[in-house]
Length: 366
Image 1: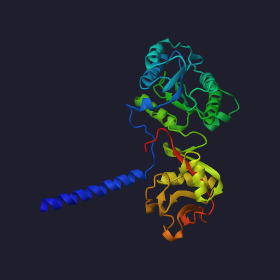
Image 2 (image 1 turned 120 degrees about the horizontal axis):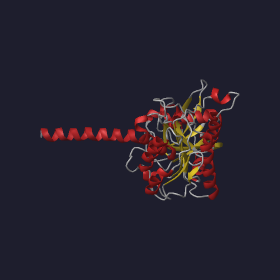
Image 3 (image 1 turned 135 degrees about the vertical axis):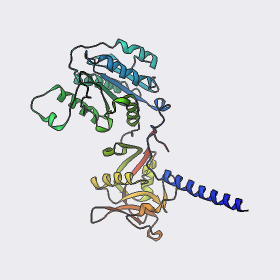
Image 4 (image 1 turned 90 degrees about the vertical axis):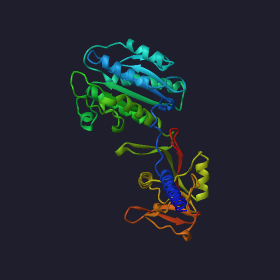
């Protein structure tokens, strides 16, 4: 009898713990599916241009890094297509049909000689390839990525860019900035040349600068995944760039007030739902978006204390700045307080508020 009672108690404890874990999983940020390195390459759908420093000092090292990267990719029409440039195009997107072709061809990349790598010319060639790809209307959903491998310092800090005397760094920085504005992700891999130290390269955003020299290929693969875990325009990716955290949740703010039902219908027409708030990171992101664009009050995708996205019951922890009151109304809005902070509030679903629609990226872990 004692043994049976002990077993029942243990089962209850396990059930409570499991429910807690499940609730924590439901109410945590939706992450990008980048953890499974074995199957990750088959999930990527990208057009990647490798821009290589093939000056006489580093050509062999660059080819080695490129070989390590390519072996971890799945090259093919439905997966990753690659092109290779230095200061001219060595291979366009149509040259390689598989990994074997690409790896065998690396040895044929010409050394350009000299000791100064002109990154601006390489980036210009990469832009030409992306423009041609866009004009052909192939693989419109594929993400465009540049992977720059060089031993040359390229400092794009504001002071360098604004100096009066133009330099090769200035031109490269301007081209890179323009490419990023066009939605092209730039990943930088520094390598050691004559110096024992890695060069400082700031062409990319800090979140796409590989700084771990010992694990460059693995880190670059993770960054390629993060680049794929993006949102199709006009949706915006939920992210915390200060900490290089990118989530697979995509939101689109609507600059028009509607009642709750009309807002739901608007989002549904975009194959989306009213945005939920399941994490402090998501709340901070939406609050900033709303305050910056004067979109308050805005609807939270929650009715009768259930989320629109999955109809799960909302945890009352989200009412820390506000108070849940079933008598206050069926629907929930975020309002702006006098001190500049926001709070949750219940109200009539017939009132009109701003809102954001939400969907997940293709790389999401649901």
